Image 1 (cartoon, rainbow over the protein chains, first blue to last red):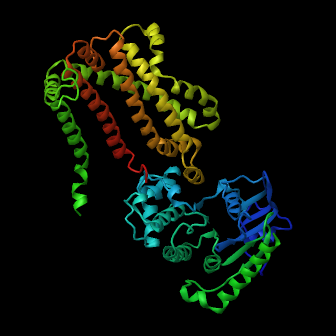
Image 2: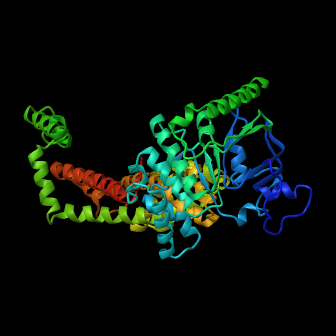
Image 3: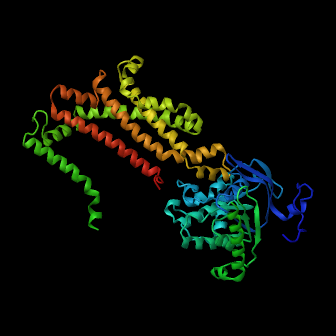
Length: 274
Length: 253
């Protein structure tokens, strides 16, 4: 973020040296530390995630890409450090999380529509309200799936779309996706990328996407977070500002090619360090 | 195309084959005719026995005992299995005891249960329930423990409390394995009930019918009772499979 002077934030944020940085960011991560029994994965890691942007996380195998979003989303406890969303802890915000393995993340005993509405049930919303919210979401996304079917009756891509809708139906402030398309075939992956892009453009939700495919990471992102090997640090945090909606032609534009080449160079440098 | 049309009828071939071999064996006197009556005599005895004869009553008594034993076993083991399975540490601490008694032949427990419950239905039913309970317990606990981690995480990440995770995810995740336990449990209960009916001062039941027919050398009756027991066992299995297919439609998918 080149311009440090942005909007005033909501209350509760301590005024200190980092206040300006905090005000510009949706998520602030400070001093994040995580040890596994055999390795230090994160050591006093700092990161800001800007509001309303799509961030791709990319890095060498096993560097802790998924661990990072799992800590942010509270699936994995951190050993030390602080993660705040507009100055609030995770338990005070609504967020969505999409797993790589949609087959195991959806509930096969519920119809797709009931899968999508499950988080609303947890929020104890009345049936009419649940229905209204789902309808609104479906109308926004223009999804053409028979949602009265059970998940196992749908194709892989459709199941992952149901997962994404389940994550979006709570109208989350932030959406996490952990390699959401890596279990799909290439044709379906291309289709789903554009679905995700459309959803992002529709909703403007701050989105963090872990990807193991550099093309996908750049194509979808406003910023690409490149991680180093363990203990992970920010190798680069690249801006990519191409207009949306991006399409196949984007992949051959000079700017895309340049950014991707730069990311690849950083990635290779990090891999060789190991 | 042709194979699809005939596929559902394939099992009949085995049945016909068995009956044909049986007829041939009787025809050529491969086995002493006193020991092996013809299929016709056997099925006549089966028909007469089941349609208003003694055999029908014995069939009903065995059905009753097995059902009761399985119900008791399920009523104890399903909640207990969920409780034990919900904590891996808890299950590991009782695993050896469960496995030990699961491996102990239930028939070895008869004398003990006779002392406890006397010579009567209580003993037969409780030994059968004991055997079935351990099989069901083990399967339910494993079903709960092997609940897909991603699914549990998915519920947790959506804000489900520990209790909601248990009721909304773990219970349903364990259902397919629970049905495996119920099917195995009812089979074992039937085995134990039939054995008990043979030897523990019984006056009715399929075990009693088989044993008595043998003592009286009424071979068609004996074979008829064996087939009735087979049909009962198969029927139980089929029933659980149909119930499972209806209520656990996602099993194996």
